[in-house]
Image 1 (cartoon, rainbow, N blue to C red):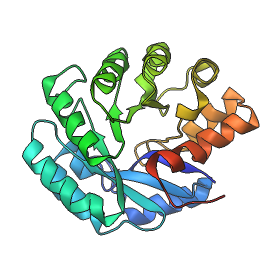
Image 2 (cartoon, rainbow, N blue to C red):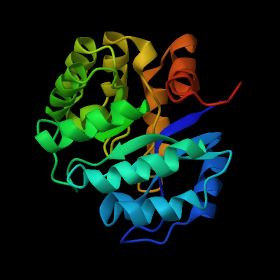
Image 3 (cartoon, one colour):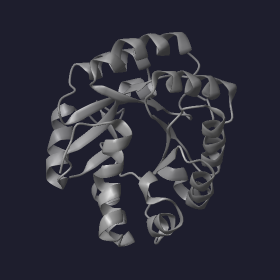
Length: 240
Protein backbone atom coordinates (compact mmCIF):
# COMPACT_ATOMS: atom_id res chain seq x y z
CA UNK A 1 0.00 0.00 0.00
CA UNK A 2 1.26 3.48 -0.90
CA UNK A 3 -0.45 6.78 -0.04
CA UNK A 4 0.85 9.94 -1.67
CA UNK A 5 -0.04 12.88 0.58
CA UNK A 6 1.33 15.62 -1.69
CA UNK A 7 -0.06 15.54 -5.21
CA UNK A 8 -1.93 17.85 -7.56
CA UNK A 9 -4.79 17.69 -10.03
CA UNK A 10 -5.50 19.91 -13.00
CA UNK A 11 -3.59 21.81 -15.68
CA UNK A 12 -0.42 23.66 -14.83
CA UNK A 13 0.49 26.84 -16.66
CA UNK A 14 3.01 24.81 -18.66
CA UNK A 15 1.19 21.52 -19.26
CA UNK A 16 -2.34 20.05 -19.46
CA UNK A 17 -2.63 17.26 -16.91
CA UNK A 18 -6.12 16.03 -16.02
CA UNK A 19 -7.59 13.40 -13.69
CA UNK A 20 -6.83 10.55 -16.08
CA UNK A 21 -3.17 11.51 -16.02
CA UNK A 22 -3.19 11.36 -12.22
CA UNK A 23 -4.58 7.83 -12.22
CA UNK A 24 -2.28 6.63 -15.01
CA UNK A 25 0.72 7.99 -13.13
CA UNK A 26 -0.44 6.35 -9.92
CA UNK A 27 -0.87 3.03 -11.70
CA UNK A 28 2.59 3.28 -13.24
CA UNK A 29 4.23 3.61 -9.84
CA UNK A 30 1.90 1.48 -7.73
CA UNK A 31 0.41 4.40 -5.78
CA UNK A 32 -2.90 3.25 -4.34
CA UNK A 33 -4.28 6.54 -2.99
CA UNK A 34 -3.31 10.18 -3.55
CA UNK A 35 -4.45 13.29 -1.71
CA UNK A 36 -4.52 16.10 -4.25
CA UNK A 37 -4.96 19.85 -4.38
CA UNK A 38 -6.31 21.60 -7.45
CA UNK A 39 -3.62 23.48 -9.32
CA UNK A 40 -6.07 26.25 -10.10
CA UNK A 41 -6.84 26.60 -6.40
CA UNK A 42 -3.18 26.78 -5.40
CA UNK A 43 -2.02 29.23 -8.06
CA UNK A 44 -5.03 31.28 -9.17
CA UNK A 45 -8.45 30.98 -7.54
CA UNK A 46 -9.02 28.79 -4.49
CA UNK A 47 -12.85 28.54 -4.61
CA UNK A 48 -12.93 27.84 -8.36
CA UNK A 49 -10.24 25.18 -8.07
CA UNK A 50 -11.87 23.50 -5.11
CA UNK A 51 -15.19 23.41 -6.96
CA UNK A 52 -13.58 21.78 -10.02
CA UNK A 53 -11.71 19.26 -7.89
CA UNK A 54 -14.88 18.19 -6.08
CA UNK A 55 -16.24 16.82 -9.36
CA UNK A 56 -13.36 14.38 -9.97
CA UNK A 57 -12.55 12.89 -6.57
CA UNK A 58 -12.89 9.13 -6.21
CA UNK A 59 -11.99 6.24 -3.93
CA UNK A 60 -8.35 6.70 -5.04
CA UNK A 61 -8.23 10.49 -5.25
CA UNK A 62 -8.98 12.37 -2.04
CA UNK A 63 -8.83 16.14 -1.90
CA UNK A 64 -7.34 19.04 -0.01
CA UNK A 65 -9.47 22.14 0.36
CA UNK A 66 -7.04 24.84 -0.72
CA UNK A 67 -7.41 28.08 1.20
CA UNK A 68 -5.90 31.54 0.90
CA UNK A 69 -4.97 32.93 4.34
CA UNK A 70 -5.72 36.42 3.07
CA UNK A 71 -9.31 35.46 2.22
CA UNK A 72 -10.56 33.68 5.30
CA UNK A 73 -14.26 34.33 4.72
CA UNK A 74 -14.21 32.38 1.45
CA UNK A 75 -11.94 29.79 3.08
CA UNK A 76 -14.51 29.22 5.81
CA UNK A 77 -17.27 28.82 3.21
CA UNK A 78 -15.29 26.20 1.31
CA UNK A 79 -14.34 24.28 4.44
CA UNK A 80 -17.98 24.11 5.51
CA UNK A 81 -19.08 23.01 2.04
CA UNK A 82 -16.47 20.41 1.17
CA UNK A 83 -15.17 18.79 4.36
CA UNK A 84 -18.53 17.20 5.26
CA UNK A 85 -18.53 15.29 1.95
CA UNK A 86 -15.77 13.01 3.23
CA UNK A 87 -13.93 13.31 -0.08
CA UNK A 88 -11.83 16.23 1.15
CA UNK A 89 -9.66 15.15 4.08
CA UNK A 90 -7.30 18.07 4.68
CA UNK A 91 -6.35 21.64 3.83
CA UNK A 92 -3.62 22.91 1.53
CA UNK A 93 -1.90 26.26 2.05
CA UNK A 94 0.85 27.51 -0.25
CA UNK A 95 2.71 30.17 1.67
CA UNK A 96 4.59 31.60 -1.32
CA UNK A 97 1.72 32.05 -3.78
CA UNK A 98 -0.43 33.66 -1.08
CA UNK A 99 2.41 35.74 0.38
CA UNK A 100 1.58 34.34 3.81
CA UNK A 101 4.77 32.99 5.46
CA UNK A 102 4.40 30.78 8.54
CA UNK A 103 5.38 33.69 10.78
CA UNK A 104 2.57 35.92 9.46
CA UNK A 105 -0.65 36.76 11.26
CA UNK A 106 -2.53 35.74 8.10
CA UNK A 107 -1.22 32.19 8.26
CA UNK A 108 -1.68 31.95 12.02
CA UNK A 109 -5.34 32.87 11.62
CA UNK A 110 -5.74 30.35 8.78
CA UNK A 111 -4.17 27.57 10.83
CA UNK A 112 -6.48 28.33 13.74
CA UNK A 113 -9.41 27.98 11.35
CA UNK A 114 -8.09 24.64 10.11
CA UNK A 115 -7.68 23.40 13.68
CA UNK A 116 -11.31 24.24 14.39
CA UNK A 117 -12.32 21.93 11.56
CA UNK A 118 -10.18 19.06 12.85
CA UNK A 119 -8.27 18.16 9.68
CA UNK A 120 -4.53 18.25 8.88
CA UNK A 121 -2.99 21.17 6.99
CA UNK A 122 -0.34 20.62 4.32
CA UNK A 123 1.76 23.79 4.34
CA UNK A 124 4.49 24.69 1.87
CA UNK A 125 7.86 25.08 3.64
CA UNK A 126 11.31 25.96 2.37
CA UNK A 127 14.48 26.46 4.35
CA UNK A 128 14.04 27.77 7.91
CA UNK A 129 10.33 28.45 7.40
CA UNK A 130 9.72 24.93 8.67
CA UNK A 131 10.81 26.16 12.12
CA UNK A 132 8.23 28.95 11.92
CA UNK A 133 5.56 26.39 11.02
CA UNK A 134 6.52 24.29 14.05
CA UNK A 135 6.17 27.35 16.26
CA UNK A 136 2.76 28.15 14.77
CA UNK A 137 1.70 24.54 15.29
CA UNK A 138 2.77 24.60 18.95
CA UNK A 139 0.82 27.80 19.46
CA UNK A 140 -2.37 26.48 17.82
CA UNK A 141 -4.17 23.95 20.03
CA UNK A 142 -5.24 20.82 18.20
CA UNK A 143 -3.54 21.68 14.92
CA UNK A 144 -1.89 18.88 12.98
CA UNK A 145 0.41 20.35 10.33
CA UNK A 146 2.43 18.76 7.55
CA UNK A 147 5.62 20.50 6.47
CA UNK A 148 5.46 20.11 2.70
CA UNK A 149 8.94 19.39 1.26
CA UNK A 150 10.16 19.20 4.92
CA UNK A 151 11.99 22.44 4.35
CA UNK A 152 13.46 21.35 0.98
CA UNK A 153 17.14 22.33 1.28
CA UNK A 154 16.50 23.02 4.97
CA UNK A 155 15.94 19.41 6.04
CA UNK A 156 18.11 19.87 9.12
CA UNK A 157 15.74 22.63 10.21
CA UNK A 158 12.96 20.09 9.71
CA UNK A 159 14.61 17.74 12.19
CA UNK A 160 14.68 20.49 14.80
CA UNK A 161 11.10 21.47 13.96
CA UNK A 162 9.68 17.95 14.23
CA UNK A 163 11.48 17.25 17.47
CA UNK A 164 10.08 20.47 18.90
CA UNK A 165 6.42 19.82 18.04
CA UNK A 166 4.74 16.43 18.25
CA UNK A 167 1.89 17.56 15.96
CA UNK A 168 4.19 18.42 13.05
CA UNK A 169 4.61 15.86 10.26
CA UNK A 170 7.27 15.84 7.56
CA UNK A 171 6.66 15.17 3.87
CA UNK A 172 9.90 15.04 1.85
CA UNK A 173 9.18 15.61 -1.86
CA UNK A 174 11.71 17.98 -3.43
CA UNK A 175 12.82 18.93 -6.93
CA UNK A 176 16.37 17.91 -6.00
CA UNK A 177 17.65 14.74 -4.35
CA UNK A 178 20.64 15.49 -2.08
CA UNK A 179 22.38 12.31 -0.98
CA UNK A 180 21.45 11.17 2.50
CA UNK A 181 18.71 13.76 3.08
CA UNK A 182 15.84 11.38 3.88
CA UNK A 183 18.03 8.89 5.74
CA UNK A 184 19.34 11.66 7.99
CA UNK A 185 15.83 12.87 8.84
CA UNK A 186 14.46 9.36 9.36
CA UNK A 187 17.26 8.57 11.81
CA UNK A 188 16.62 11.70 13.87
CA UNK A 189 12.83 12.03 14.25
CA UNK A 190 9.88 9.93 15.39
CA UNK A 191 9.13 7.67 12.39
CA UNK A 192 5.41 7.95 13.11
CA UNK A 193 5.53 11.50 11.78
CA UNK A 194 7.10 10.78 8.39
CA UNK A 195 4.91 10.73 5.29
CA UNK A 196 5.35 9.97 1.59
CA UNK A 197 4.70 12.58 -1.10
CA UNK A 198 5.69 13.03 -4.73
CA UNK A 199 4.54 16.51 -5.86
CA UNK A 200 2.96 14.82 -8.89
CA UNK A 201 1.94 15.96 -11.41
CA UNK A 202 4.46 18.78 -11.12
CA UNK A 203 7.29 16.28 -10.57
CA UNK A 204 7.41 12.68 -11.79
CA UNK A 205 7.04 10.27 -8.83
CA UNK A 206 10.27 8.49 -9.82
CA UNK A 207 12.19 11.23 -7.98
CA UNK A 208 10.42 10.58 -4.67
CA UNK A 209 10.62 6.81 -5.02
CA UNK A 210 14.33 7.01 -5.78
CA UNK A 211 14.99 9.21 -2.78
CA UNK A 212 13.09 6.87 -0.47
CA UNK A 213 14.85 3.81 -1.89
CA UNK A 214 18.24 5.46 -1.39
CA UNK A 215 17.40 6.07 2.28
CA UNK A 216 17.35 2.27 2.82
CA UNK A 217 14.74 2.48 5.58
CA UNK A 218 14.13 -0.63 7.64
CA UNK A 219 10.95 -2.52 6.83
CA UNK A 220 8.85 -1.23 9.71
CA UNK A 221 9.77 2.42 9.11
CA UNK A 222 9.26 2.06 5.36
CA UNK A 223 5.76 0.72 6.02
CA UNK A 224 4.93 3.68 8.25
CA UNK A 225 6.19 6.14 5.65
CA UNK A 226 4.51 4.43 2.71
CA UNK A 227 0.98 4.45 4.11
CA UNK A 228 0.34 3.69 7.77
CA UNK A 229 1.09 7.16 9.09
CA UNK A 230 -1.00 8.80 6.38
CA UNK A 231 -3.93 6.44 6.87
CA UNK A 232 -4.01 7.28 10.58
CA UNK A 233 -3.43 11.02 10.16
CA UNK A 234 -6.15 11.46 7.53
CA UNK A 235 -8.41 8.71 8.92
CA UNK A 236 -8.57 7.00 5.55
CA UNK A 237 -10.59 3.78 5.19
CA UNK A 238 -7.72 1.76 3.73
CA UNK A 239 -6.21 -1.60 4.63
CA UNK A 240 -3.16 -3.38 3.27
